[in-house]
Image 1 (cartoon, rainbow, N blue to C red):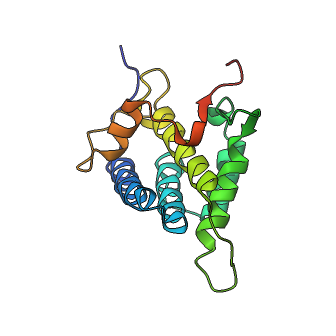
Image 2 (image 1 turned 135 degrees about the vertical axis):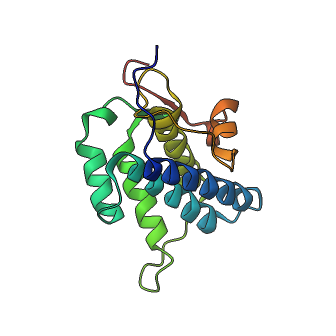
Length: 166
C-alpha cells in the first residue's frame, strides 16, 4: 500500500509545469537547439525542486537545499567514465540557464543538455513516479511528456541514472 499523501495543489502545479518544460526542451533537442533545450530542462529542474521545497528561494538556494536533503543522497549519474554527483549537474544546469543573460556567455552543448535531461528524469522518478519513495500521489499532468519520457526508459547521450550501489 502506498503511504504517500495526495500532492498539494502547489506541488501538482509544479509537477505539471515540469512536464510542460520537458516538452519544450524535447522540441529544442530534436532541432539541436542546445542552449534553448538546456534552458527548458533547467526550468523543469527548478519546478521539480519546488515540488520538494516550495516556492521560496532562487534556483541557487534550491540547489543548496537539494544538496543538503538526505532524500537525494543516493541518486548518481553514470556517463560511462564513472559516477557523477547530481548536485554538480544541477549547478551546471543553473549556470547554463543563466547564460541567457548578457554577461554570462556560455554555450550549452549536447552533453550538457543530456546531463540536464537525465537529472530531470531522475528527480521526476524520485519525487513523483517511484511508488517506494515519492513524496506525494500526483494526478496525471495535462501534458504527459515527462511521464511518457520516464516510462520509456530513455537514456540521454548514454547516461544512466542510479544509486551508489549500482
